[in-house]
Length: 104
Image (cartoon, rainbow, N blue to C red; front, side, top):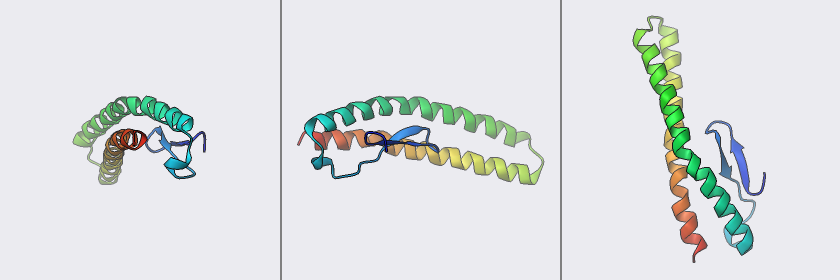
């Protein structure tokens, strides 16, 4: 763990990895983590767009692919990228919860 965050290879971003309850961190630590998360969160839309471009490219490949095993592989890869996008959307919303908790 690195200052409350760990890099997630699958999603391509750092994710919160708290080793204790949020309330157990000092106000300074919480503020630093929220600031860092806001920077990470700000990069999520760009990451989603990059994954969407990969999906489009793979769909174009799939449109002309005649080999069944290759088609299956491309479908799997598209589904995996789509799953990453869903997870990134969920993480993008985490900021709302953290900000609310930080102000209570």
